Length: 121
Image 1 (cartoon, one colour):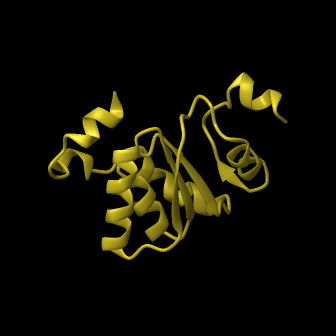
Image 2: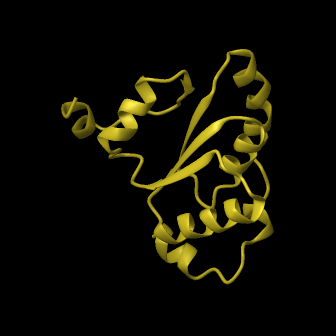
């Protein structure tokens, strides 16, 4: 569904450029807690990844849509952001590598890996 949506976009709608208020408000909290790495699940075209990276965080964006990630990578190049990377995966079935990254860093995380992923540990 999401890949079909993003593949049909000719240009990025303005609403996909607007930041969520909670992301803006999270930055000072993350900094006060000495968070260095953020995992953005369902990152879409990467607007929050870019904002967080510009605020000094190392960001990994995860999205199921190949086309959304293509747009995200183009946006990152345009903005010249270097501390952001992207992985194509479903947030309900995270690859083992991501689970290890989450456990080994002081990161903000608001999700639970799938049973299948947990069983691989």
